Image (cartoon, rainbow, N blue to C red; front, side):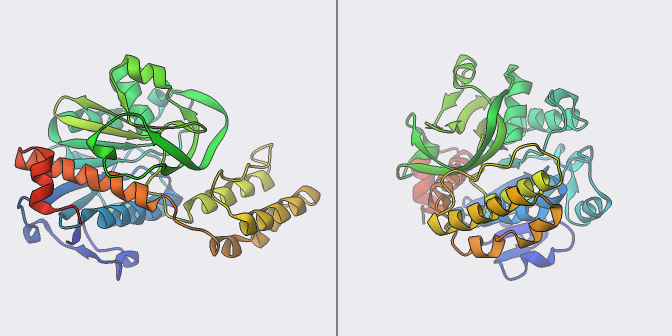
Length: 346
């Protein structure tokens, strides 16, 4: 079934990817149809990639479900002029969102500038959206920093700094039975990219259910019902494309070359194969002997990209498929098994 995207002119990068631009009058409203909002708060350089990552994952998970997606942005997130113009052309303001109801909403994080998230300029608008979601959605996904902001806002759970960046692809195990992790083979592989975490004991103390956990990366997926909505929190990034971690690693190397960080970044865990590691180590050796910003131009991005595999796609698609089925069951006001029989799982 189609993934329909509603807002302004369709970005050229969507053309040919199976995503259709539409307006609301073209959308069906049947049992197998969902209305989903994407609130994209990612940094300027990642705005468009984030769109494609989430739309690609939703499209892969949808099966026979039709999805009408709307794009929203929070104006108080600091932006460059170019990013501001892009958002004005292709996104709605959250003021419009607050007067509506959606089956689901996905809220992304952004790169924080301050230690206390409550001091960020967008905190008030972000928490207003979260409060709205509790009453006006069947389920809400909070991604990475948004997950940290969500538990801080609703339960006062602070995040704890890590000794080093939690970065790479990690194997997770299922901690309990839950519809979101049904039909997902073990291990559940999910990428992470973060400097902080929320602790498992604090989550349990505040009534959250931890669904997946990694020995190396800690808690990933956890949930809690908040009023009318099932809040789904990811500390990781199941939506990431196969090259996203590589781009982030190159960015961190560039920051090292520009003297913006003291230590050379660790390579992402569980991501590179032997060939890629050899290329990456060879480049690092060169940098250690000659630390100049211009050297980033010889970073072996294309050679390494050729070796990459999207090893977490099956895990991510399964979780999102279950999430869509959950919202169909709420739309039908029927048990999940009835919803699955109505629209199928394929």
